[in-house]
Amino acid sequence: MTQSWKRFAYIQLPVAAVVLALCAQLIASALGNVPRALFRADQLAMAVLSDPQEYRILLLGDSKTSRATARFLLGDDSQVANLSTHMFIGLSGSLFLVQRYLETHAAPQHIVLAISPQLYHFENNLRLSRYHLWHTFSRPNERDFLRINHPGMSRRDALPAILDLQEQVLDPIVSLVKLRLAAARSGAPLTIPGGWIIPTAEAPVMHSTNSDLMVEDQVTADERNLTLAPVNAAALTELCKLSTEKGFAMHIAWPPMPGSVAEALSSSGALLGLEARMRRLMQDRCRFGGFFDFNKRRPYPNSSFQHDRLHLFGDGWEQRYASDLREYLGGLLGAKARISTQ
Image (cartoon, rainbow, N blue to C red; front, side):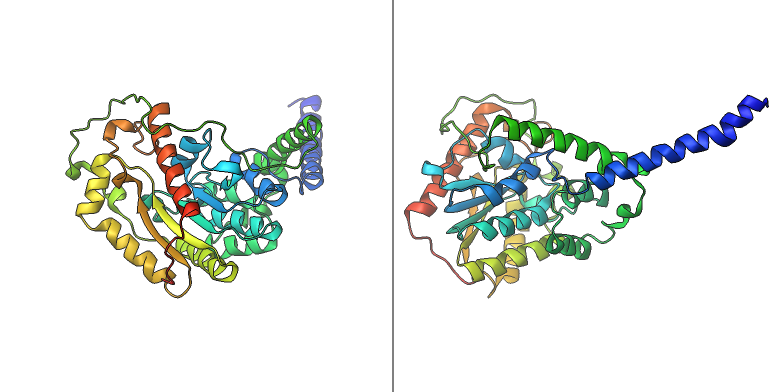
């Protein structure tokens, strides 16, 4: 090895590596308090604190509900706050959105959870849970809940920034740019995104290539497994406590499911079993307004879903679900809902 290569290998390269590591660490430290602003959940986490509107209903939902309803008006005069996001923030993130909303607003009359029954069993892997929750919900009470119910989530914080560039450097830079651009465009407070289209109950639909002849026996074990994951039970318990303390009613709604899945869950008793477990969990802790099943409002064949069998296929099916949801929410506002303490 020549003298110049020795100088490069033993002096210049290590010095360059140290300089890069120090620069990354300095950038990470400088941007450590920049709010995450990459996804809808990030926007909602900030908007629930600053939106001046007082809402009568908070809608919490998974990506099925979020995708189907984002463009549509779910209530008149901004009475419904659509806080539906995606399963990667889970019930933990939904709980945090409600807690933040209640810090700056009067309690709503109702909170509706429109989440697929399978997702009450779903427990995110640690990497996805951290990425979608840890940097968005960074308040002490939120971090404590995550540490207890997602063990090991904080472990990655020990890494130097140079080994965690996306979370500690790149994402904060992108978030800062997006926040600065948003502030330059409008000086108004950040508000909860709402729809602008009134959905039609009989909107024309398209059908996917999923077979409507699929039988119950082809429904997977994962789709039938409706046990309640501990982290979701903990989040549901906290929501129930808030229900009693703040006086709002909690409602559980089952979004559309492929016909074969809905039939399998019904005939096997899996859905009734989940409802029974949830009732026991909420007993004496919650002002509970009951369960509502959108699959009994209208049929959703297998071909009304995308190939993932989770998200609705096309604008027509989304409009139909959004229309049914709008009608259901309007019923909560227009009539005194029967509330139990179970």
